[in-house]
Image (cartoon, rainbow, N blue to C red; front, side, top):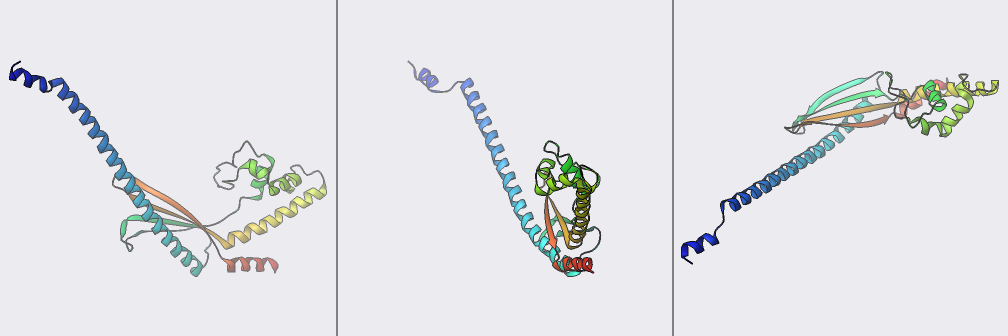
Length: 222
């Protein structure tokens, strides 16, 4: 065997080299994609943590401002960014609104027609959202409303039951008014851009004014 023939046997053929390069290319693509995904996830987690911390501070400011200025009638909106905190690219929008209970008629309808695990629907007024009918119907309040028919003629078998239902309706209206006057719902939406996607996260806080509740209860007693 000549030296040239021995050298040829120790080398790689063109097909072997091409296959090796193809495998290497596929591995590099997977590696780069994995690194990019990890970087994106790390960036998203970083911004989410920053947004959560900023939202916590803004919620505290909104709560202090609300308690200092007092509850206003109707809905309020405020918006801005976090330039003072060093993040001008992160914006916020706050909506402050009275916390309203669903109407008494809506609760009576839920107790009468619980449905197969559905809520009260998503009507234009938005009342009753998040109240699963089947759970409410099996609750103590739902059972009581179903028993007395809510004073609305739905299942009241006697004048006494109808009168009791009417009394419950009147007391519910009083409670509804007190809670509306003393509780505010703050919805804070924080938005930012990662350079690829626009992200947003929403926070909700309920603020109670004990003085406002005492004032409302005192007005009822006069």
